[in-house]
Each structure stands twice: as C-alpha cells, then as structure tokens.
Length: 127
Length: 135
Image (tube, rainbow over all chains, first blue to last red; front, side):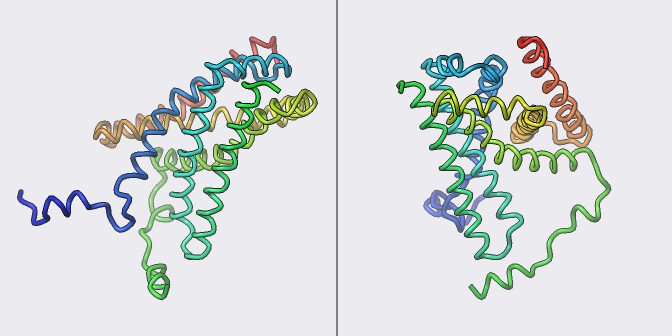
C-alpha cells in the first residue's frame, strides 16, 4: 500500500503535541524498569522495614542499595507523573483546572523525587 | 480558548453506566485506582527515607507510625497496590505485543492479576513477619 505522505512528513509525524510516542514509550520503559526495581524494594523492605536507625542507615548507605534506590526513585517518579497526567487528561475537562493540575502533578513528582534522592545521598555520603 | 468550550461538549462514549461489569473492566478500574494510590503512597517511602536521613529521633517516630496497627494496615494495602499494579502492568506489556487479547485469555489474565496480587501480598507479609518473629 503506497502512502501519499512523503518520507519527510512521516519522520516529522509527531502529532499535534509534537511528542509522538514519547509518553507511551517512557511509560513502558519505566514500567519494565519498575518491575525489577520494585522487586528490589520489596526485598529491601522485607529485610529492613521496622529495623532501627543504625541498621537502616548502614544498609541504605551501601552503594548497591543506594544506587538501586536512586534508579527506582527516578524511574518511579517519571512513571507516576505520566500515569497521573493521563488520569488528569481523562477526567479534568476544564482547560484552566487541567493546566493547574498538570503543573501540580509535575511539582509533586519532582518534590518526591528530589526528597528521596537527597535522603539517599545524605545517608550514603555520611553526616 | 473559545474552541475548547465546544470540545468539552462532545458526547463521551458510554462506558461504566451501560456495560455489564466484567472482570477485565474491573481490573482496568483497579489498575487506575492502585496507580493513583501508589502516587500518594510514594509519600510513605519518602517519609521513611528522609526520616532516616534526618536522624535517630525522626526515624523512630516514622517507625512508630508504620508500626502502629493502622500504619501496618496502610502498608499492607500499599504492598497489595504495588503488586496488583505490577501484575496489571505486566498484562499490559504482554498485550502490547499483540498477544492474549482474545476474551478468554484476557479474562484469565485479569483473574491472574487479582489472585496473583493477593497471593504475592500474603507471601511478602508472611516472609516479612516470620523474619521478625510475628506481628
């Protein structure tokens, strides 16, 4: 089947939002990563949930745990921001409220992400 | 901005109110709800991490909150939500490849999602609690 669109038009075909499959792809990419990362978190929490401060501090300061946690937080907040964006776009129809909700969504994701990253780095680098 | 008003008045496809409840539909709804719950639930992980970073006193407080029966109940729900959302997501990844889209397979996967998530939640908590010697 021949298409009437030129190759240039196809390669530029990123839709009205100019993002193409970006949302879908990042959502799936982080979904696959999260399977492993959440698996790690569950094992970590089975071992250390409820443990005292010194034990947890020692465990989270280990590079392998800290790195996995940092990747989990990054992948997790990207995934949850995309998911909440979809929910907002589905249910919030007023343009103004939608824009505000989308902004708050990004703020929340970034705040959670930075908070967790800061905590893990502080535990890792001492103090 | 005038156009957006008109767009908002388009008829929406009939869904929840008109279809007979099916397991696939219910799991779709639960997937979204668990996703929303996990979104808020990240506060729990953030609280645990930041308290650990802040110091012994703050960490003891968070531990106390999570150790309270109500806190444990929330964590149990959080465990189930993450496992359900994970299994539901794996179902979507499978569907992305074009597989298991027939009604019978889709129904079976939906049942696997709910039953699997409950079984895995139980397994995680049984292992966790046995390591600590009970509730």
